[in-house]
Image 1: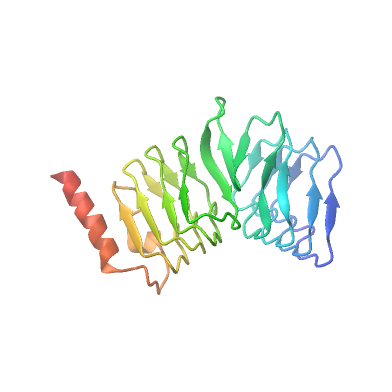
Image 2: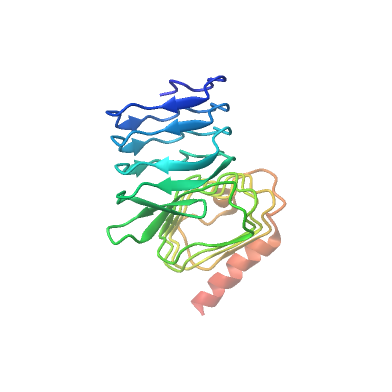
Length: 231
């Protein structure tokens, strides 16, 4: 853990075959790191492994035997343009700067990471996705509106931290919204919650002292939709 964290002059890394895990925070804040080559023996990338590696560019290659990628592994990697998942990897897929966990059928079931560089204003999450992982949309610059699927079950804690989203409509299927899911989303103007998740209070959703998005309109949307469901 933290083995190479804050190394200011580290620019290139090639990990040898035999390594199975990149532990948490190993390359944290290595801002000069431009490229890294992962071995085929690798099976796990732990949380925050490459957090704040702003020098990484191009597409990050996920090797074929990687089974687990923990939350926040690529948080604030602003200059990565996408992912490249090796042929034969049965656990992950990618599309347009978004890394997905997949099931045995190859269906996208979880968003692991949406890179901040993804340049689209409206993003529609695939219909098969059931979970948005912790820090999945952290630091997202360009996405203003997220369209969630009707099968979505979990929005994990800090999923949208520091993102620039303006509005989000949360479907009835969502049963869990993690703590600080929209923390520091200073441009958020509208949240519509159509169901009755475990976490529903303003503090649990946003957990900040001052937010321009915390308006009466949000409270009314929640109340009106709940009342409509009870009629």
